[in-house]
Length: 230
Image (cartoon, rainbow, N blue to C red; front, top):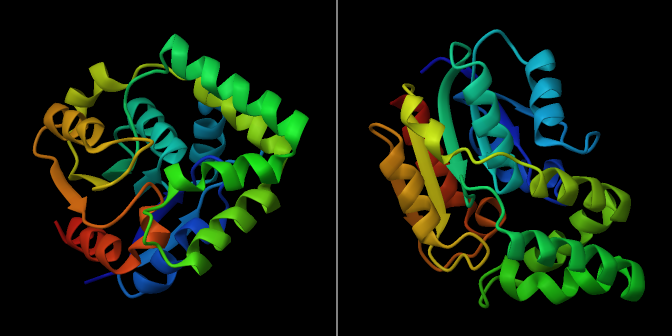
C-alpha cells in the first residue's frame, strides 16, 4: 500500500503526544502531519490554519475537539478530504449547560490551579483501569499546553456550530471510533454520527475511555489502518 497524507487533529489541551502511537504505528501506510490547534480561539480559525498548511488532498482524523475541526474541514473542503475519521467526539453544538460547565472549569482553573482541574478530570478522561503512566502522560500533556490555550480552546468549543445536519453530505470513506467507557462523549454520540454519514464504519474500543489513542493505541491503529485501506 502506498503511503498517503494523513492529518491528525489533537483535542482540548492536547499536543502531538496524543497521536504519538499513531504516527509511529502507521508510518508504513501514512505520511502523518499533526495539525496546530494551539494558536487559535475558534474552530473556524483552526480549520483555516489546517487547510492553509495541508497537502492538496489528505485523509483527516480528529479526536474530541479535533473531531470538531475535522468536521469543519470536511464541510468546507470536501473535494480535498479523501477520508474522514472521528474519534471520541460529538457532532452537536454545546448545550447551554455544557457551555456553562466549560466556563466553570476555566474559573476553577484560575481559582484552584490548572493542574488541580486536570487531575480532577482524569476520572472522566481515562478508563479506571488505565495504566497510571498513561494517565500521568495525559496530565503532563495538558500542563504543557497550559491554561491560556485551555481558555482559548474552551471558547472555540463553546462557539462551534452544530455539524450533525451536514454529515449526510460526507461521501468519502468514514470511520467513527469511541471508547466503550468514554464518559465525555459517550458511545451514543458515535452511533449518531455513524448513522448520519453514508457508509460510515463504527468501531467501539473495549475497556477504554475518552483518550483512546493513548489508552488503546493498538486497537485504534488497527481501526485506522483498515480505514486507510478502504
